[in-house]
Length: 268
Image 1 (spheres, rainbow, N blue to C red):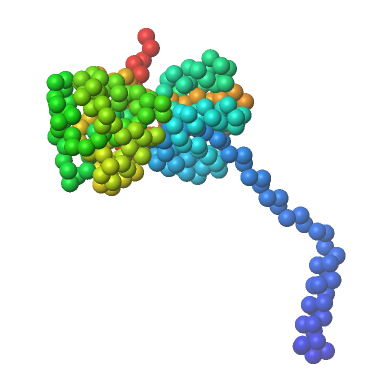
Image 2 (cartoon, rainbow, N blue to C red):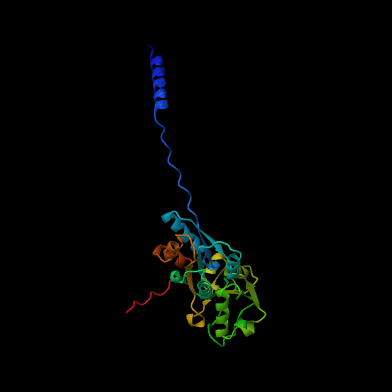
């Protein structure tokens, strides 16, 4: 038998053995996990997206967000839309959700804070004294971009701070009302307003403005972002909420100009 004939015979033998061998099942592909669905205040967007990527890398669990004013949250609830988690800076909303039986009050968790700032274009510096009696209306050239009080706590706290210093009445008629801090920041960046009164992280959306003044803590109620798990939520919703407080997640928040919350005093 020639060498080529021998190799052909071996090839045929191996082929026959392959046909006779029992079939081996291919490993079944893992089914994709159902995402956790969360509503979140718009200011949280840049940091939360990074945190969610980190969380997915560790757990393979996807988290998807709906960002928008609090009216968006109300629309989702009233239309029967599905949410597992609410992440918000408005304690009244969480209290209402708990009172209605939609949220589990035992899961309510504060995870980060921030500050209220005045932001203005770098080429048009705004000098402000954070005190009652300072003529803010005269110092500011143009309108002031603010978040609507109907959109959530950011607008309400801005109004509270303006009232604290007696700046609200003199500025009437010069407010540019926005649905969120991102829109307010962009208005100042584009020159539609002389400045924006927003949360510190909102300046991350634009390049041309930055903080020129920070409102002291005693000029408004505390700014605290909290989360609560809704009834019937995804099993991983509470796990993701807890993840927001781990050092890696807190690092993302702080890099985005959020402020860590004070460490609670130990219980006696």
